[in-house]
Length: 304
Image 1 (cartoon, rainbow, N blue to C red):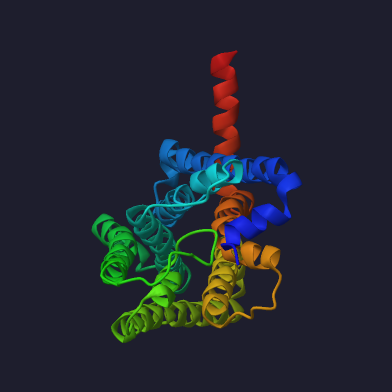
Image 2: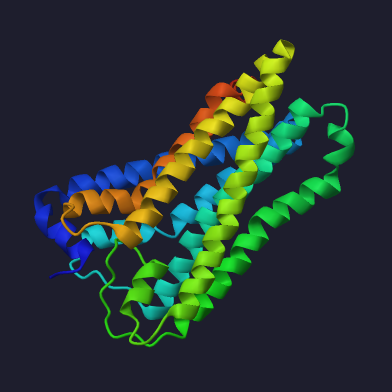
């Protein structure tokens, strides 16, 4: 049977330009909303606070991850051959996996920040110093990169007995399934990484349990919880649901599922969270929304 991307394009040949236009539009929107939020936070001095710095990091990560998928996918939609070099495939695995795990790390850091701001407000500024914020930003980026570097280096050592990737992009599970020999060590490392990020999820759940308990106990803190934590919670559910669905489907998915549905399942975490996260935060956080509109008005006045 043809590779998934070829099947997808063959069954939708007359819609190829439409798919290209929709994908390009999605990518442009992703770039615009993330860059707009990053610039708003950088240019507005009163947004130079830990919560917004972490949000800026989340938006940068969205640009980093989607750049590993969308340009190649757009090229494939207009091409009759859908191949990628071995080195290029390993790089794509690294960038997409490090994007996904970094997203989770940043959301864990953001939940810690909200816990301190709402449950321990008097200690917040003494704990969230510039050094602590720098450490947390570096932690959220370097640990996932180290984990994925180990995963990719181990995958690069495998001897493959096939060259057909079962997704629209390269991912590690496809490499492991193509191996000629035992991949027990790769599986052990893979499960270690999964357990590490399950630990992140448990940490986030504990933080939110504390936050909800505190908000219910002190009504005056409820407004701050709803305003600053609800966007984070929506983003968390959004990212977790799409990643969990992708990981579970990659390993245990049914062959009877239509190819078009498989393709959508495979790429949703590269489209939905990067597009929705900045919009959710931009609409819900009053300071971000007001700063963005003020900068837009200032730009118009300068041009006028």
